Amino acid sequence: MTLEAGMVAPGGTVGILGAGQLGRMLALAAAEFGLRIHIFAPESGPAFDVATATTIAAYEDEAALEAFARAVDVVTYEFENVPGHTADVLARHAAVRPGPRALAVTQDRLHEKDFVTGLGIPAAPYVTVDDLPGLRQALAAVGLPAVLKTRRFGYDGKGQVLLRDDTDTEAAWRAVGAVPCILEGFVPFEREVSVVAARSVDGAFAAYDLCANTHRDHILHRTLVPAGVSPRLEQQAIEMARWIAEALDYVGVLAVEMFLGADSGPELVVNEIAPRVHNSGHWTIEGARTSQFAQHIRAVCGWPLGLPERLGRIEMENLIGSDIDGWRQILQEPGACLHLYGKRQARPGRKMGHVTRVFPEGGTAS
Ligand SMILES: Nc1ncnc2c1ncn2[C@@H]1O[C@H](COP(=O)(O)OP(=O)(O)O)[C@@H](O)[C@H]1O
Ligand SMILES: [Mg+2]
Image (tube, rainbow, N blue to C red):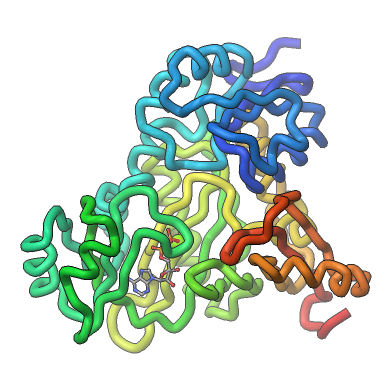
């Protein structure tokens, strides 16, 4: 049997950059297709428990990257904050999906905002900030309240500070580490939502139903689906994700985080793009015909996408830090699907696992 160019056959190996829980769940999904997984990360992590092969090396280690790329059939990532050069080195020896451009655009908040607004998609007002006088100028332009965010390496609310009338500007600048930033106008959102979607090598696009997300201490706490927004807005959100995926010639699963505006201003504002599987899509393991992890594997292997169809009303809750102590109680609930990531230490703010509940549509608790 001959394969189309760029297609990985069962028995092949998918290489993943990053060893966290996303990599772990990707590896489990790959195993179900008879694929092998090789994880590349600077240190061991939850994905190592379920991988076929592992490499521990720095993302800057060109010799290790080359050996890794030669040992796999396709490279993808569960962690996007790798140096841009890493993707370029890998791309010389293996297919890298999504491609280096998706990575370059999404790992820098300034490039990401320029890209999104360049597509005509609304984003929060933003100004680039390189030093303290620049921050003062930006505040005059954007107004208060505003959010100062580092251009790179932010996640789970790290690398950002909310500025109000009484905030000491200099202290805020120090708090983000005095590194290149953007200042964003605060969006008085009514709700936070995300689109988790996939695009295949041949350009097919499939989106899951819109997710409604609530955060606790800037970390995703719960995802509810349906999101409870009008079908018109849900369609619009999905169309925005489709434009983004097409403009990046994206291959794989991506997530687009959005704010649903309150009162005046645009109804939908794009906040962030994650070039990978996303926490707000974890419910798809039990709650959709094709999980986001299986979908990502299908896409990066050059395979057709599976149906994203939702199988019920969804509640997904993250188990953060000491939440994991409730594991026995969750097991008492036969319908609750418990996922634990095998992390040894339950530090505050650390994602230890999640639990998904799928209810009959329109029904109440099972
Ligand atoms: N411009 C903004 N207006 C209002 N809330 C914001 C804004 N930017 C961020 N937030 C809040 O902070 C959270 C984290 O910000 P985000 O930009 O998604 O960074 P990350 O998820 O990488 O930490 C958002 O989910 C939202 O709750
Ligand atoms: Mg975010």
